[in-house]
Length: 393
Image (cartoon, rainbow, N blue to C red; front, side):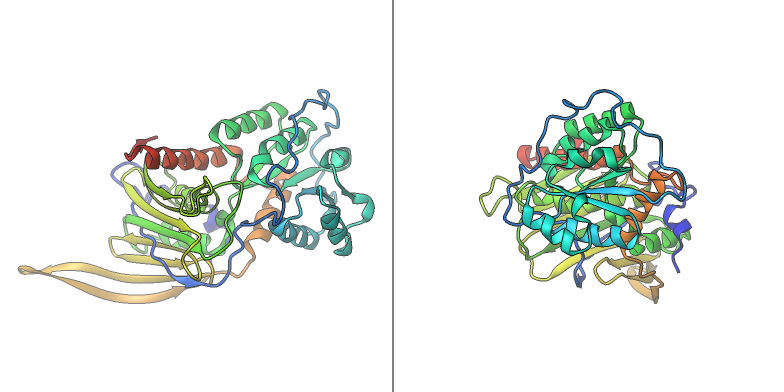
């Protein structure tokens, strides 16, 4: 089984000529079931929900408290009860926290109460609960992440912020600085980091199962309702921008992209993005049009390939090489193996990691700086698509 240790193991010792661990991978489309991706968090609601001036009404030091002691039952405020917020509510309840919720919709608050949240802990204005909680889980539209998180940090509270961290690199960096100034952690919701498939991939790479990696590719697409706050690159392709940085342990170095706005919304609804991690080229496709649900990644190396289906939680190792025979070449397949993958729910692992970090039982595995890095790739892709050229990072 892919272990938790393997999921976080360093990748030293497997190097490319550029100095990046691992090498090059490839991602190939595989159909699958349903992975919750955070799309349509707020059906029938404006994306301007919960905008406020960060920290304007919070005096310095107000509500500031020490880190919760170990063994303490955490009070967690969930801000946002849309489609993805519903999943957070279920998982946080299963994890045994004392749950507070905030949403501007009375209907959504009533729904939460019916799901077991005490009525006195369901508020329309999230700021009314800040004095009563130990940490905040921000699951609102992307254009409100910065304001909500800054207000909570100013109150001395650690925050989990769903991806993307913010609308822009500028906001993301400001939020990172706010966390540093407050001395509080911000964990970004890049959920693929916690998927058991990712742990299996890292374990196989660390063991050198496919040799030096040559390239990678990923597809995150399906016929679904588009988000109204950000484009498909920022909501879906960003999964792979962060994943490949995590798997390769290497910074992105240059980006080229094609983007389309077929629906005329002023936001991209289809994109192809080529991101280089040192000498490792990767290709990421995202769109709202392809039938089915596609969440897969293929990593190609010297001695074979890893084919990962994130929807089905399946990783297949294909072994084989191209060999020269006199004046010809042969493709020689030498084996195929389905690698063991755990069945833990990624969201549960992700939120448990946040609770552990808040309580001092573990590190912040996805800090704000990682969220900013992913946004840098998103903005570079938009610039590349607009200018029609490769953008160096």
